Image (cartoon, rainbow, N blue to C red; front, side, top):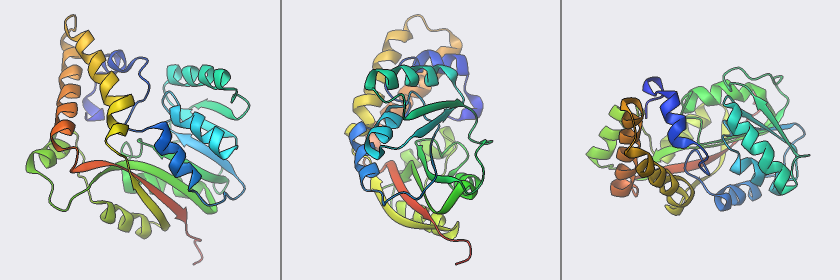
Length: 254
């Protein structure tokens, strides 16, 4: 759904108390996090953290304090409660803030984790926005949608470009963009199909069906867009997917 046309009250009615706010899984977050090289000294930021499933995994795996940042206060409150229950509250700090205007000093962040949110500024724009915050050799890990084929179906391409307002690129093209923006590409990791369905689309589809009967016009539009998105994934989910891009900042002097 195009963020500029969303009725946010209706959106949050649909998304209330869902396990995740985008494709992903604890197992995938853990696998990518465990594969990272040793972190340099500096802060760890989880941008657009939502309810924070990946934040809990990062704190547990990295054994490092994590600043979880989101503009929606209820998500941060849910995360704080989950951190308490998991015994991770000493490692997790929540901050209500837009990632377009972060309070962190340039050159002080060791790792920026952006799971499923870099599409909001755009892939290149996000890299340019957040790169100055990283220490030399700092890491940026972002998951974003990409074509998994060189010949995507016309219906899938039309959906992404016309309904989502996003022109998808292949994984290789996105890696080339990252290199041009001053990053070394350490690896790419595509989400498996179950990471879309189990904790994201399945509960989202069930909640959409439960809300349908009593939905007013604004909520109906959100439900319709949501159901089209899930149907498109069912039909063409082998042609596109979310891919983690593990990037390391190249020294500006190089």
